[in-house]
Image (cartoon, rainbow, N blue to C red; front, side):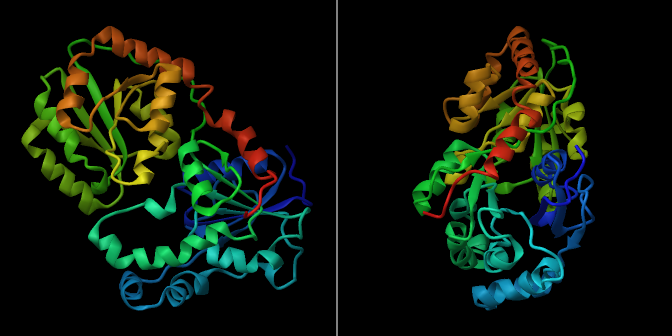
Length: 390
């Protein structure tokens, strides 16, 4: 669709937009719907944007650490974020305000809520939409997070309920209900983090070699040790491959933890988000086994779930309600009854090649309804939803 210069959107997120798959999809959907889309974020101009990119700066790590420890939250925000947000012509009146401001997650909200009256046209002609990727009040638990981030998060969370925000969306119904209860706001729209449909066939299942996969962010808070403990309880039919992004230090630690298992656990380099489905297609089962140590993890519905569907893998989960609902609806895999290595290993040992092939065939049938193309309509409806702060 040809862009309509009278419909202008600004997409803002404190991430590298060229690598942020959820934000990239939103930009693509807006462009395909005829919007001219500007963006604010880290990294280069997003590949799907048809407008200008305003690069968000970042302070050196020592400055950030000292700010986390010493500064009041408002000062910390101004030093690390607010003072680095580039000038947007609509704010000084040199250009008309936007029809849509789309903020992804909460990091830029203190700025966005303060400038929205100048940056966005007055309602009903302009809108400020907030897309929340996780349940912010329950994202982490470790002592380091409590030391460096908890005070700041408690200061910033109330901005989510700002009356300046026209509408909100999130990734899963459970997270939406948590926000509704926390702020007393109307129901959030649900836009799942599904990647684009990829035309693939399921790879064949080999009864002598069941190929397990875990891909995504290397995160010690999600207890990856459980996966290695599970492998110790399985026979040689099973191998596990880790395809991880994130901290090289954390990945090195995971490699060390996996050393006793030898060649039965391997690590492969990550690929670009657009290549994940093809890269994971040779495997059989994706392990997404996140003990619910936080409300956020309890209601997790991660990108890797939908990437695994596009890769035509069966999926193995614990009692994570958002994933369980889709597993049951589309017959995609198995739900492990307890959060232990013994329970996970027991569920895997009972699998046959026929069952694995059945799950992969089910993923093939679900690939279109669980694709980004199916979510585009929900997103475009979400940004025009009639919501309010209370």
